[in-house]
Amino acid sequence: MSGTLEFVSKRLTWLGPGVSRFIEKKMKAVPAVKKQIDKQYDGMMDDLEKSLKPYKGKYDAYSTLPTAGISREEVLRKMHELADQEQDRWKDGFVSGSVYNGDAEHIEFLNKVYALTSQSNPLHSDIWPSINKYEAEIISMTANMLGATNTADKICGSLSSGGTESILLAMKSYRDRAREEKGITKPEMVVPITAHAAFDKAAHYFNIKMVKIPLKDDLTVDIDKYRAAFTENTIVAIGSAPAFPHGLIDPIEELSEIARSKGVGFHTDGCLGGFILPWAAKLGYNVPKFDFTLPGVTSMSADTHKYGYAAKGTSVVLYRTEELRRYQYFTMADWPGGLYFSPTFAGSRAGALSAACWATMLSMGEEGYLKASKAILETSDKIKDGIKAIPELELIGNPLFVIAFKTSSADLDIYRVLDQMAQKHWSINGLHKPSCLHIAITLRHTMPGVAERFIADLKESVAFVKANPVSEGGMAPVYGMASSIPFRGMVTDLLTRYMDVLYKV
Ligand SMILES: Cc1ncc(COP(=O)(O)O)c(C=O)c1O
Image (cartoon, rainbow, N blue to C red):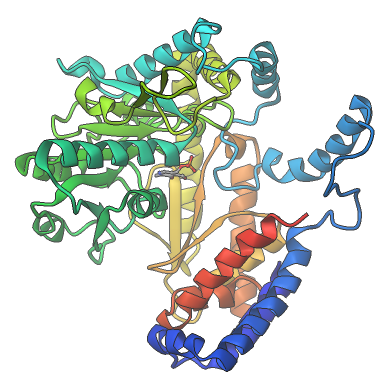
């Protein structure tokens, strides 16, 4: 990757640092300049493709169906070969988030459940009522973990394919309710800038205006600006527990009360924290209220496929009332194909994922989640202490299990530290505003020696960057570009083309 990005950064600098986005747009309108920019992009993409497609040329590629089917043994052999090359990093705990459990026996159990239910589809509830039973129970267990027992309201929900779908479903429900009940045709949502990109995606898909609230110097949301942002078109307000970038929990109690006082719904994004914060609170960690215990919280998302330890592909979206959930549903009574309904975006769905999620929750139980949370939080404490002991680094806030840190020394480029960590096999996240890195601690990091290895590698990486203040290549120049206004438009173009490359055979 680093060679590619060096190439990218060198090619982009030809525009010069003083070019604003406006000028960039104007330039693109000039055919000759557009042609030149496209040529630059094409060059970059050729290079990028090499790093994105490591198997190209080394393994058979199929752009058309094989004439005769390949034996199952051979297909499996091919797939094992690729999987074997991709397992070490996450299994050995080098990756932030991504694989939250990863224990071999747990995976084997999930695979058995998947095998048992691989043909099922909850769209056909008459054929597989077991899957509907599993889903209803997952939703109920999640709701009761997130404060449903402390309210007279009948908390309800749906199972979705992941955090993003849960958020999209909730935002669509608020939009449709506001249109139906208040006649709002120009909906707006009030969102701290640290809320997950899935909210922007919802705004993009459902034509909702994002009203983004900045952070104060301590990187907590500016509550006065949050309060002032509500208008007669506000359909929902958002808070995260915690937010992805810095792992910090928004002041959900205050934010949801502001929304309640304005007669607006409030969504707590518990995609990351939903399955760990309740247990952290029981373990005595300082966890502010964030769930349905608060009367202003009208919906939540909580990802079973993260700290719920289910296989990838499930999340829970919860609503305070069945009335609100109904705005999520789709029904059709006059289709020649028959009476049609589906509660979420997909039609047919993999019942096996719901089954594996249910099986995970039953096999973990409260004690399992408590034990896992304890191990993760203790490892996080160890890692936080290790970061605090590196003089050039500074923790952002006081996070629980998603730990962000920046540099306190003006001449240290944190993105070059990221590059050095990548050289040592680590896959941690680079963030903007401010420039910082984060690691989401999972059960993989609780294995003996992993936290110590992280800190030792981090220390070495910082020392290397300090000793070698000038270097080219890696992620650092691209992160630099992305955070500077002149180049942000170009980075967006680059990301679009990146996705095109992903689909190339
Ligand atoms: C706080 C938060 N919300 C939403 C999401 C989106 O989840 P998914 O990637 O499962 O769609 C994430 C993912 O990391 C997240 O951290």
